Every structure is written in C-alpha cells, then in structure tokens.
Image (tube, rainbow, N blue to C red):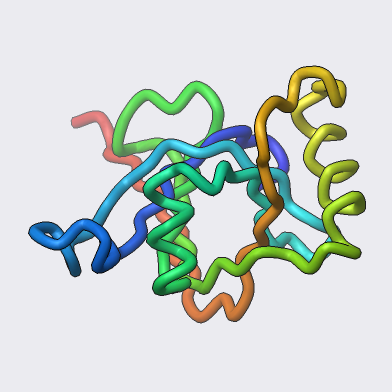
Length: 133
C-alpha cells in the first residue's frame, strides 16, 4: 500500500445513471494510506465514482505494485465503505495525501474533498507465480 500510488476503485452505479443503476463502475484513482493503512482519496464532487459513493459507500479497491506487468505480480483487493471525511479532518487528510504524492496546494485544483475507506471487511492478497517447466 505504501508503494502504490494508484488503484482501481469499483463502485455501484447510482440511480442518477438510470439505465446503468446497479452495474459495477471502475475508476483509476490515486490514494494515500493513513497511519492505520486505510486509503484516503481526493475526489471531485463531479466525478461519477464520487456520486456513486455518496449514494452507496460499498466498494472495492484493487491495488497493484508499481511496475505491475501481469498476473504473476502482487496485488490486493480491499472490500469496504468509502465516506467523506468531516470538515475538521480535511486539512489532516490533505497533508497525508500531498506527503505521498509530493504535490503542493497549487497543484490541487477545483473543489476536491477527502474521503476515507472504512469498515474494511475483506482483504484478498494475491501473488501468483508460475514455475518454469
């Protein structure tokens, strides 16, 4: 988790997408883990995944090691709920986030808000390797 900068976030399409409601929706997102290893995200309120999470916080996050080159590389799938952080936690989350992504405040544009994955239920760690025969 500390090495990875990006992950695939899978949410459930909300009612606002009437014909696609209930279907899975995948997004490539960046994140930073907090001191307990819970992922922190910076989301725009306009993003589809943000709207989906506000309607239904259940999701999965698939994290791969940097330089991932195939199914024999390590990856983890985390099941949990993603919620917006309270206003008094936004500055703390911003510091966590920019420490990992090494970006200054000027590089954060728009009305982005910080969210955190909580209620982590399952973690699947996969590291398959096939022997050479």
